[in-house]
Length: 90
Image 1 (tube, helix red, strand yellow):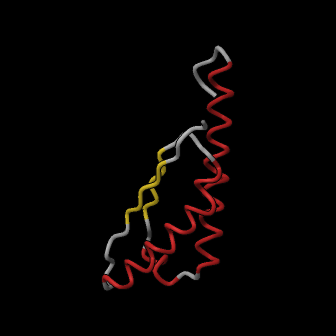
Image 2: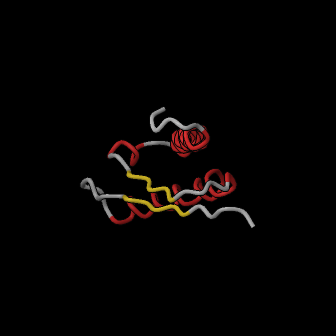
C-alpha cells in the first residue's frame, strides 16, 4: 500500500455567490482527483484559492495544479536528499 495524499481546499467568498464557490470547488476536486491523488505523495496538500481563480478556465486551473504538483515533487525529492546527507542545511 502506498502513501496517502490528503487534499484540503480553502475557497473564500471574495464577493462571489455560493453557486460560484461550489462550481470552483467541484472543478478543483476533480483536478485533484485526476492529478494530485494518482501522484501518491506522502503529503497533506492545502490549496488556498486566490480571487482570480473564479474567472479561470478549467484548463488554466489544470495548469496551476500541474505546477503545484511539480513543486511538490521537487520538494519531496529535496527532502529525501537532505535526509541522506549529514548536513542540516541544503
